Amino acid sequence: MRFLLVITHAPYPPTGGSRIRQAAVLDAFGKLGSLDVCIVGDEREWRQSIPHPAVRKVLCLRRPAPATGQDGRLPGRRRLVREARWWLTGAPGALVGVAPPRRIAAADRRALRERILAWADGDYDAVWLDDTSVGWWLAGELPGPTILDLDDRPDLLLMQRRADLSATDPQRLVFSALARAYRAASRGAIARSTVVVVPSDADARRAADLLPPVRPPHLVVVPNAYPAPAYGPDSTSSTLGEHGRGSRGSDNPPGDPPTVALVGHTGYPPNLEGMRWFCADVLPHLRSRVPRVRVLLVGSGTDTIPEADLDGIEALGWVRDMRPVLAQTDVLAVPLLSATGTRLKILEAFAHCIPVVSTTVGAEGLPVVAGEHLLVSDDPESFAESCAAALSEETVRVHVVANARRLWKENFTPQAVRSAIRRAVELASGRNPCIDA
Image 1: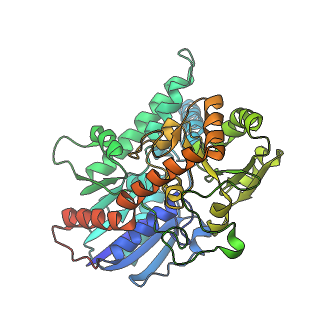
Image 2: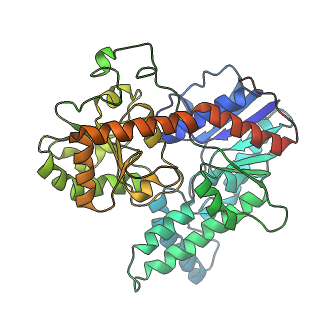
């Protein structure tokens, strides 16, 4: 079988949630047949290689940029209205990290499609689109049945932000209008797709309102997954050498100083918002309980935010290899106040026997139970108390780490992704793919 994968990030090295998911998906498709891969992203992505034996060829294209909104062909009043509307929608669009659908010029979308069609080799058994915005531009436009990964829902993020505004705030109208625009674009992409995949059962329930009433596409859950660590309880290696304190187990005690890590690239606005909330509101309470606590901020852009200069905070920026960071981490904090999908960083911590403290929003989409698999708190003081408990109470650490690792091992390994991708391909192509397990 032959597949075309259109992705927005090179999946290697698999650091960060989107790259880890893409690496697992690419590997699952690679076990079913040969792959042509098109990367639609910025030039940094083009420098990354894809060392997978199933990949035949790779095309790198620049992601279409939002238009400026200026149009000299319109008469004065209409031009002012157009530019005002684009300015209003651009600001909330930045809050979710995705340009509004209509701000990508039709000519740019058409040029992107034509470049891919000229490069592609005939028809494919399935075309995978890994991003909501890529689906807006390309769903149903490429040679093969479309499988759309609805991993991100900017309309839901906007409505979460809208709920935080006062009832009289005029921005509520802008947020509602823009959310409707995102939702309409997503509905159009879904209607042109054969299969829509989501990362969790909760996301499947939320996606139901986007499905067309007539001939809806198949809906398949392709969970996020994290591979077995190269070291740790299931590894033959017993040490990390320069990577840290040694292999982790459920009874691994905190280090000196005890370390809390926050992971995420700041280009995704909910990550930046959560890091700032933790540093400003949670950390003072945590320091009153654990005075010597050290905080690591990990991910692209974390070394450029003002919080990086605070005492006791180390901002590492983007790291190519997460193993040294994980070896130093005693607690993973996930202080998200808005989000959709599921957090791969949580599964990464589960696999590495690191206790997790999250907000309710941060843990959404995963079949976790608060107090069993992780600790959940939503206000600054209780979040700090949970972090302190995960750092200092051995019974809490041992209990949640053992349960969390069992949950990861049973539900969120690459085998789960391979089974789900096989099902999606079968529905899209009408063929029963033979997977090389």
